[in-house]
Length: 158
Image (spheres, rainbow, N blue to C red):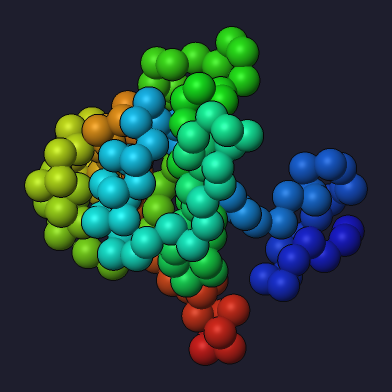
């Protein structure tokens, strides 16, 4: 058995999946990148820390650093999507930890997001909700007790 991480999680074998160490960038697509940038800046309370001009084709990418681990949330102009990428919503929802799920959901809805799934208790210490942002992306929010436990351990607060 090989120890897998700082949390002491045990791995039973080495595989490419065991090399996934953490979320580094989460990208969304938008037909109107400027509008998406303004919407997310208002929702997040920060401006993007990075923007790129795409080879004379106008603004193509912005990136925010958010959360306790400064994860990167990128928004890409849909013109640069890989060929064949579905434009309809997919079945995957990334959930971002929030401390007050009801207040966060209210804020998202007040900024024009559409409710996908209301506040739902998934188990003790795990509550989710999800919306569709004005640009067609699914955005999940979650109160996650495990996230807080890991965060406390990473900060030496155990």
